Length: 447
Image (cartoon, rainbow, N blue to C red; front, side, top):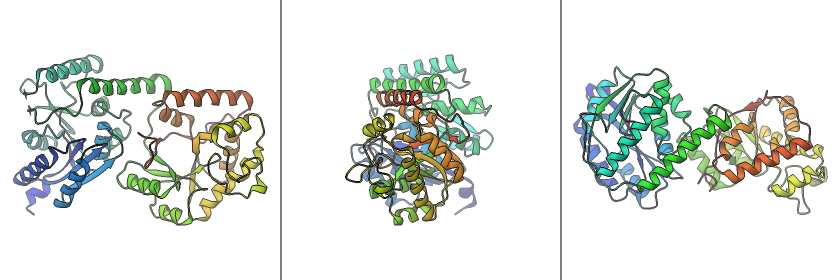
């Protein structure tokens, strides 16, 4: 390979959703053009929640071209597709493109500029840009960007066009801390970088309507509004900083979930795992030990399946079938003091010991259905963490950050926790609490 090609190394991130009619033709053309331009490139296609043959076609392209990598995320999420794509990029310069907006002049010019400027944006509203889209889409873009500049004072005209980044640690830290999932993630990222005094250059682009919009103007506005509400909730209701680590819950529950979690780890959709000791087999635990993750979390389970401890040692914790009580019954019995706290302590200790005996170093504690935050369970967990040298416990903030997208679950959790805190005294200490993002690969929970 010529030395010029080695120097022109770029990653191209392209989110794809329901693109079966156009994907193959556009990507074939993109590969040909990048080769003509002598780029050493990788193309990362991030499929998100498609309902047509997009994923199948993307996999065919990956099989055809060694420079193409396909990543799948379970839900339709433009923002998460961008985030996961950037986190998986291997080249020193990264471009984020939409399938219907691939401007080769922007790529070539942007690549040159990125050697001296960390961020470059292709602006649809730049005075020298040529926008051939329908009038309604142009007006929508103009209105959105006017509002954006009014409220954020950004020095650029547009945040939704193609973007180029120098692959710096600051970029990866910023993208991991983004809160939004849909239309505003790229905007949020640009705002974060701007607030850190990172210089942003802006280039004109040429836009043609290659295919119809992925969804209607109404749905686009709904997704944007959802992102705005989410940012307001984080700022004014949760009052917490975003986490920079993501934990995949429920490892051990089933083979399907185990495989989904391993894929999430491989594609950087998660950084670590929480393990259900009463479900996980010895083989599955040893398999995850080989991943050498930053830390491992014991996912305490007191409300589903069979206990690790023999029934005779914890009679108030299980029913006649030697199964845990469902969450609602468990909480009612706990509230009425029909469950012996000593039995909870015995079972929690045995679940942790089972994982440790399998070769895991446990340094984080969480729980199935968030039961560890209910007094007196929280007091028990803090005591056990101290004796077993477990540094962190999943915080209430981390759970609320997750549940706030599900208002009914959020309110029920807050109300039940409030009632329990009136009933039981609690140890007031934030020493162990840890804030993380929470995902559930392989389940319908994230959909």
